[in-house]
Length: 152
Image 1: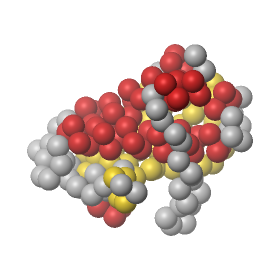
Image 2: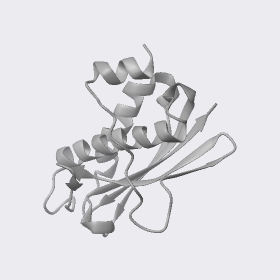
Image 3: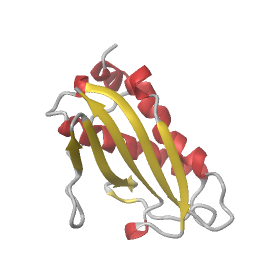
Image 4: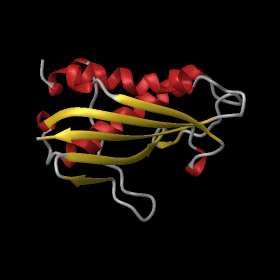
């Protein structure tokens, strides 16, 4: 199954690529490597605000991370000139989780994104990853994730 067939089977429609919220671009390419800027969690079209260990659960934040993965795939499609078949490999995800000092399940939150990337891209979606707990994120978002990919 192609990436597009997998997206369709998962009932995922890629959104329009978000505009940058500050002085940066949504992606930058160097050679065959594409660096996607951090994407913030959204719920009902607005920033999904919350802090893990305080007012949002691991399962809720895992859904937020999955939603971010959909946005990242849309941005990656734009970086590929509209053709996700050019993706050779998702190399790495870096996840920042808005967390209280005693919250330790950042890796489980980030699985929401990693699992979807794996479902959509198969072997090419197996990636390295980092998951960090941070004191705060822009606009109070519960999760922010960035991606590095190799394209043809």
